[in-house]
Image (tube, rainbow, N blue to C red):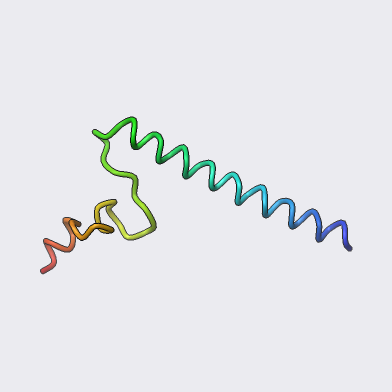
Length: 61
């Protein structure tokens, strides 16, 4: 029982660390390739929505 719980905790921590690594690599890629646009933070749609210059907001109203 404790072994299963410990295994679950370890797996969750590993998945979280891998996710942080993937985000870091994606940000580095975006910095190295600015012609592809900014790194989209969050799930707001396009990457420029965070600084209020989103093309969707301009088109909507």
